[in-house]
Amino acid sequence: MMRILGIDSSVPQGSVALLENNHIISETYLNKSSGNHSDGLLRMVDEVLSGAQYQLRDIDGFSVTAGPGSFTGLRVGVSLVKGFVLATEKPFKGIDTLEAVSACAEPTGHPICAILDARKKEVYCAFFRYEGNKMSDPAASGRGIRQEFSFKRVASHGELNPLVGLKRSTPDRAMRPEEVCAMVSEPTVFIGSGLEAYGDYFSRRLGSLFVDNSNAIRHSVAASAALLAKPHLENHPCFDLGELKIKYVRKSEAELNFTKQTL
Image (cartoon, rainbow, N blue to C red):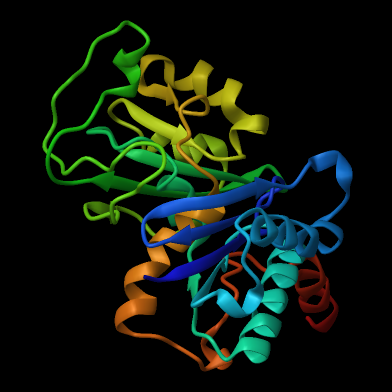
């Protein structure tokens, strides 16, 4: 039995989740109006652990989203997990944020586009696709239609099977929304906090090719990160904190200003 504490502070609505094997034991989200990640993450960890009647020493491993996403949020989450690893001497795994976001979607035969707002009129974007046994069609679900595909279905609420079949189609990129649209040639499931800023734009530009999955999210990004980390923690546990690196994708404003000053 493995207990994994998952932490996501890369998106505006951060989350913390506790997985015991493939069960979500407890999870919570950051209330956007309650403050920033540095104020809320420790409180959320305490809430999740106390809700499951566990203490930090009972955790077998940690997962954290390592980017792309909010530069400040990523640093807060990664620093917190480093502190937990030092305190408990338990293993950890950094998980790509866009992969964790895509894993929140119901399995589908359509491509999945994970979207985060990157500011500066850009989005962080990556495409994924499920491969395997039978899946539902989110575009048809509102009409009471179920479409058959080839995939090993992930179990619904409560117990989650490993995300076998979730495959990456593109690398993480910082792109303009119109560039994302140019990559879409078939009905595609869009998911992620970037839809708050660009959902209407994608809907107008893509029409029937845009499938909004925001109302069919199965669990938190932190829970996805924990689930994705499970096979790594079980089979290849890592204790070297030098391996926990943030994936920024794009340079920070400070780095860009420094580069301009040195030219």
